[in-house]
Image (cartoon, rainbow, N blue to C red; front, side, top):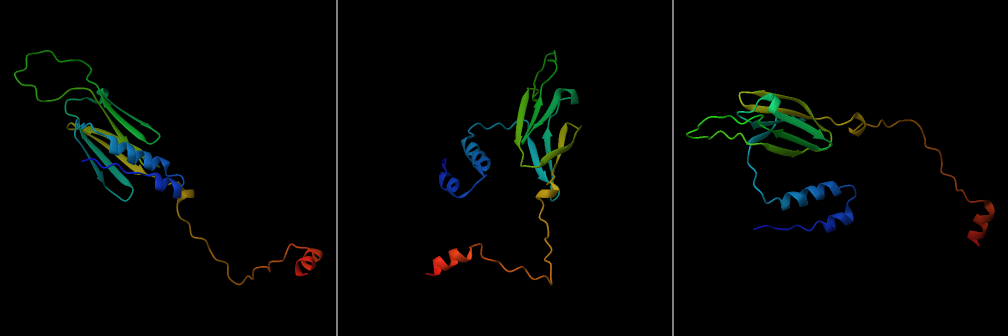
Amino acid sequence: MRTAFDFSPLYRSSIGFDRVFDLLENASRVTTVDNWPPYDIAKIGDDDYRITMAVAGFAENELSMTQEQNMLMVAGQKSGEETGEYLHRGIAGRAFERRFQLADHVKVTGAGLKNGLLTIDLKREIPEEMKPRRIEIAGGKVAPKIESTKTKAEAEKQAA
């Protein structure tokens, strides 16, 4: 049973979260189950992640990865069809395109193909200006007294 969420109350009290709400709405609309090629997503550190995809039968030159803003696209296309008579063909060699939505400041740091497994390493690199910083409190200084900006004539009028 599908449950539709209404995010309109959240739009009234939050600013700048439009992308998050759009992601939640899009995720709830996904109806197709695309489970090929199989993959794992692992958190291997505080800011480090790894995607492992089983791409048996694909060579490095038959795979491509593209990162555009917050989207990582991994695609595979076999270069040529093997000829021969198969009694059973269980190793899938069909073309695929898998998309991963990445959070802000997540970048691909490396990728490798070994034993039919494509590993993609990702790292969240928060810019220095966005990290929390400690603000020193100066001691011993007395803040200047706040003076009224009204003139004496305005103050007399207001008093009367």
